[in-house]
Length: 257
Image (cartoon, rainbow, N blue to C red; front, side, top):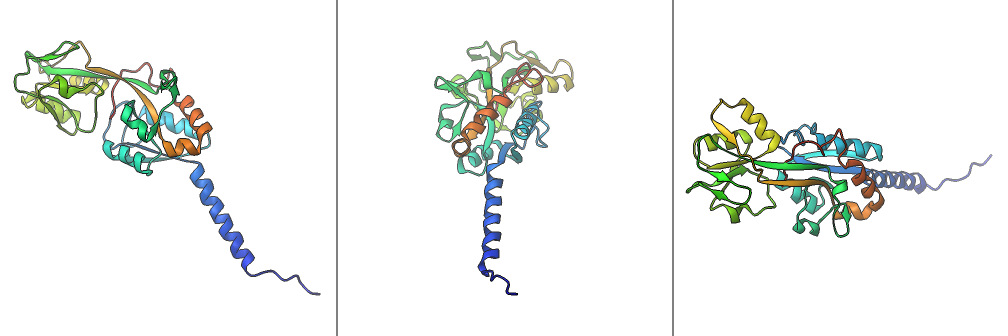
């Protein structure tokens, strides 16, 4: 009995085709989220346990996406989202980011109903200092700069409001140390982080000014490439990460670069 002849290249071709299909499928169901390597509680933690990180993880799982978490300095995350090395970053709306990042839009503007969180920066001074922020302008700084943690950017033009800006502190603790030593006249910190640090500080050393510096709305920003490849999926993703009662809409605010 003669067996049918099998062309020798068919098994190899089938294997290659299967491998290509697997790679293609893998690329279609992966969401690479890049978040800061510095903690920004409660929203973001280097280990991925921040509330906003968990929200993206839950949404990705519900939509059949495999979430790949990437941790890097904030500026590097934005660079990676631009170069194609990352698909998603969490942050505030800025016009210049529209060149490479997509937001959930409504009537040509980011849709606040699909935001992830409201975030606030507060102002801290040394107890008894004349340095002040009245909600519109700084005063009493003398020659001292306003300090903030390196890696975050404020939509409000800080350089236009203060004669000097110090962004050399790598952590909130370092920033308050500079404030205590008179290296900066005022410190801008994320609200939750500021209150936690002030609770640990000796009484009478610092005081929190009553008016916040700025409030921001945070979104899940997707790369243009990801949004073009998965338009329907992107819309569902934005809908699922929108702030829920257990999420961050009711939590105090901060701001990411």
